[in-house]
Image (tube, rainbow, N blue to C red; front, side, top):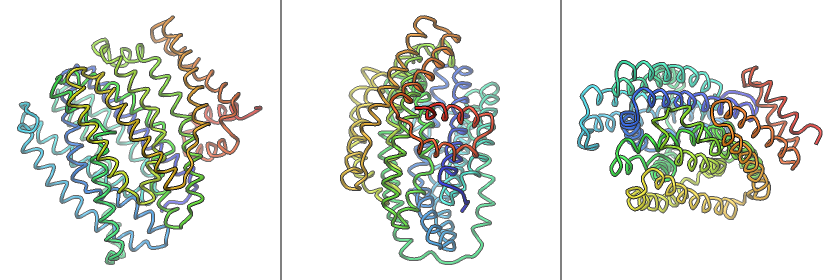
Amino acid sequence: SHGGSFAGKAAWSGLSVVILAAGRFGAGIIAARTLGPAISGEVIYLLWLADSVSLVASLGLHATLTRFTAELNSQGRPQQATALLRWTVVRYMVVQCLFSAALALTLPAVTGVAISQPARLLLLAYSLSQAANTFVTSHLAGRQRFDLMARLSAVSGVLLTIGVAMGCLFGGLSGAILGYALGALPGVFFVRRMLRTGGAGACALDTAVRARAMRYGLFTCFAAVLSAFVWSRTEIYFLSRYCGFHAVAMFNVGLSLCAMVNQAAALMTSSLVPHFAALAGRADLDSMRRNYTALTRLVGLLVFPLSMTFAAVAPVLVPLLYGRAFVDAIPTATALATLASLSVANVGSALVYGREKSWFIAATGTGGALLALAGGLLIVPTWGALGAAASRAAVQCIMIGVGTWYIQVHLQCPFPWLPLGKTMSAALLAAGAARSVVYLRPGPLGLALALSVSAVLYGALVRALGLFQPCDAEVVYRMLPALPTHFATPVRRATGWVVGLR
């Protein structure tokens, strides 16, 4: 595993996720502007279908690899970590190939839409490339090689953006799918190197570890499938069925803005599952509790202003990015951008998985999935994309409430209610100022001015309320070496100003 502090690893991990998400966000804008709402909506639906099949086919093995690789390495058992890699990769790849082939063969019957043979083959290539890329990133996360993840993500993001742009321009729907598949090529090429390294020092996987890994993987897969109804893009199926691909495209605009805000949370949370797993392997529960409380507060400081401000400026931001054809997406984008503030709960989710409590996610996910299905069947047909956003908000709030109760009562990790309440108040005031600016001066210049006013006002409120403490600044400073200099310098200065002479 790669050395370095937790802050440094978190910075590399967050950077890798943000880079890849930015590439996917840019590719989505290109596809929307080039193909239009209807065709881009169909692309979104097909990619979601392939991702969903890949999730089921994973059997939770990629999550198993991340968690138990971190635990075994923290216990000084690298040979068992190597054996775990071999044990998981064979099962993962075989099942993924079978499920992806089945999807390609049955696609017209599943979707009810006429799809050309080349598009089906390209969707098969996309599904397999994404599966391989997911396995590679899971392996690197388990080894805590987040620096290498960031480099792979940077190359993937560039290839994705270029591939989608060229594919949409010259190949339409099939070209767009090919472009998304090209984005996973760096991970595919890395598989060979990873497997060659995994063949060294071969030994059998310990029986006890194998039993735990199988149980954890199955629970995690079941939980992930159920959670997809709550946290993923399940509403796309109901929208495509009852409202058409145009509604899918409108809803996806809001999801894209929500996803970009969620990536801010990933700056601090994407490395937490192996981190919490390593702490659990050493039975260091006190550190686990402190990290949960502190990181939840810090993620709120970052996510709340972004989500509230994005929601406030959505009437200007959406047409500017996607064009006037997507004006109907503004209400949905506003609602989903606001909903992105719930990504503060990512810390708690990582804690539950790191404590090997995936059964709880599976159990609560069952209720959440049923609620999501009810919303999709009862609300979406009548209210369309906005109804899908409302249903999503209600289900997620219920799920987060139950999860927070479990973490606080059963895992004995206190939730920072008061600091988060103050942070949300500051974020709402800053977002209100931004909305006033874009209302008085709509357009790109007004948008830039609104974002600047929101940032300055929020920073002043955080400083006045004492929400950002010196110990928090130390965490940020330890992350800065992993960031590019032109980005790290303004972050360092802003951090010093907020903490400075309080």
